Image (cartoon, rainbow, N blue to C red; front, side):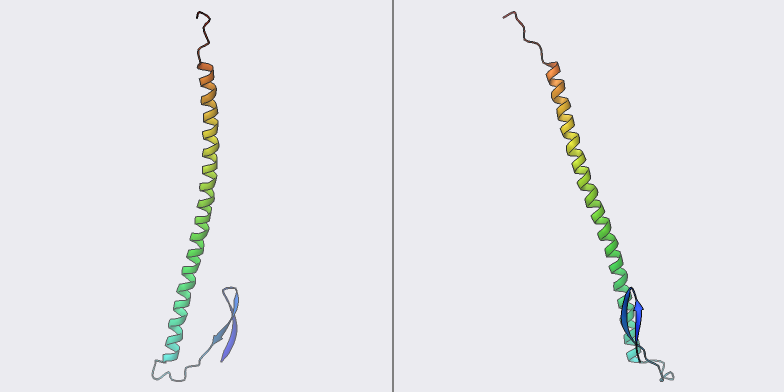
Length: 97
């Protein structure tokens, strides 16, 4: 039988089998479906982890850009301070020449 189910935020089609061969204990179609479901779950978990890593990387890139901008402003302020100190330290021109 086929059913529509809500999984992971999406409506999906689910194929449901009733196992009438319980005496054998093994139904290759059911086993293949179980394996496929396990692979899908594994891939979904990997996808969630990749999304988390992508968000972390984006955050790190933003922090790096902000740090670079802050360092640039700090360097400019330091250069201005250094220039003002050099101007103050210049000896006055002597009139003895």
